[in-house]
Image 1: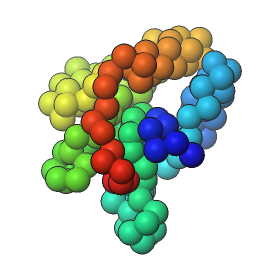
Image 2: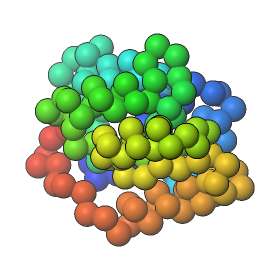
Image 3: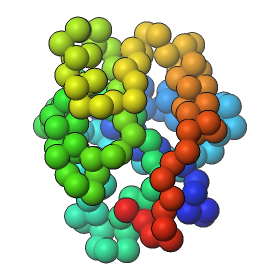
Image 4: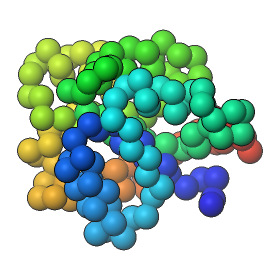
Length: 150
C-alpha cells in the first residue's frame, strides 16, 4: 500500500451509520483504507499504537470522522485527549454527528476540527460528505511523511 494513501478512521458506535459511510465511499469508487472503532478510547489506543508494537501504528496521512455521542469516551472527550497529545494534536478531524446543539459545535470547533457535519445534512447516503472528503484530499496538502509512519 502506498505510504501517501489517505487512511480514514471512523469513530462511530452505530453499526448502521458506520456501514452507510463505508458504502458511500465505495459507491464513489474511493477505496480508502478504513478502520472503524466504536468510541474515543479505542481510537486513541489505535492512534497511539498501544496494542500494536512500534511497527503497527496507524498510518498517516489520515482523516478522522468522529461521532460525538458514544459510550465510554464521547467525541468531545476524545478531542480533548487528541489535542493534548504531542504526536496526535495535528490530526485532521471532521465531526459527523446527529447533534445540532450549539454547545457541541462550540466545543468541537474549540478543539480545531476541520468541519462539523450533521448526519442529516451529509447528503443522501452520505454522498455530500464523501465529496467533501475527496475534495479535501485532492486540494489540501498534507505534511510529508518523511518515510515513516505515525
